[in-house]
Length: 335
View 1 (tube, rainbow, N blue to C red):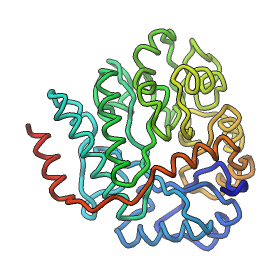
View 2: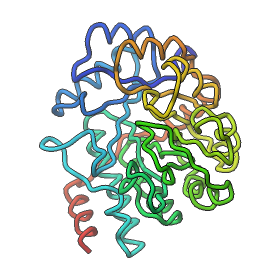
View 3: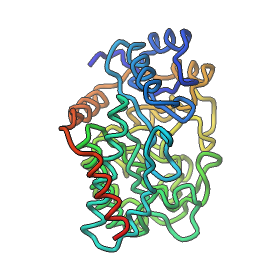
């Protein structure tokens, strides 16, 4: 892997790559790109955009998307099938049926994405909500049981991988206890570390073998009262890499979220200095991206190692009957 690949994932403004964006990405050379609703219209358009993004950097760069099902789905009808939120799967009472449904959901998501050339899904959500927490997670979580969350998230991740799509588990080490939406403000969690380890962190520890994760913009005052996890060397070093034992690729959550303070360049430098392997900037605004790129850095040796290991897991999926899989998934949901 070339050492000049930037430790960044960037977005673009619309459904078609502009000449200015093409030139900018060529020079910036980010690791990859992320798509949002503003970037998708129909399958042929998405395939063309994916090709153009990769052509801009001259390699098979990873293309990310948040395609969970339910309310977090960038690809929607009429061109793409609807899938339910994770909670619908988590509400199944039979453990075997729930696990199979989670795997099938991952496999169906992968089929949708791989058809477009998208090879990374920011999914599964392994957060564990608590009563009264902000609904920013809500039904995106499978359930309020950490053990069940871990089991179903593992199954969904396995389904994604079986379909040739790399999963990014989120939001490590846990966003479920937050009483604020980190898109709009900084959540502060005052729970003691021992309780966090037993509840919030537990699914991520069980999923530490997964190849990639996205770190939360959440303050855990009993661990680091001054910094959200994404910019905290203490949380990333002691909790994510230490207690949880995660050694996969660590992505920041979106730098443009209002939970973070400072300029976009300062935020970029902060997440990378704290221990994130890759900084994620999503909104495609050129002025912000210029600041992000100016304060970024190439992938370091650890990040290169982790990314190479993760990318090696993505392979072309064997032929399968997706219609039959969807029928089985729907059958499981209705019991």
